[in-house]
Length: 84
Image (cartoon, rainbow, N blue to C red):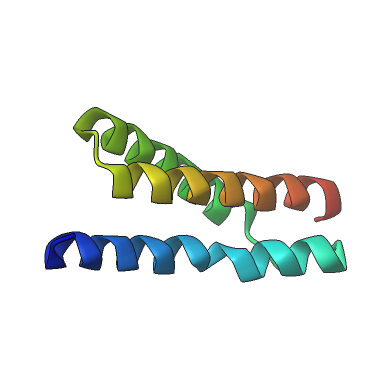
């Protein structure tokens, strides 16, 4: 793997992983009162667009990172609707 790909992979891990603490906290506490549904809806749309871009470019780092990010963002949105 070349340095540019390593940087992209590291960025993908960091930005995707950033959603995990929020998803876990929301799941454990069953509370989403302080979460902005508008922000997560916009993030879900943006992430879906990035995923589409990655698919069109056939870029595995963009596809993988945004597929996981979209799943986490959607999970947080669903928890917000259920517990928020």
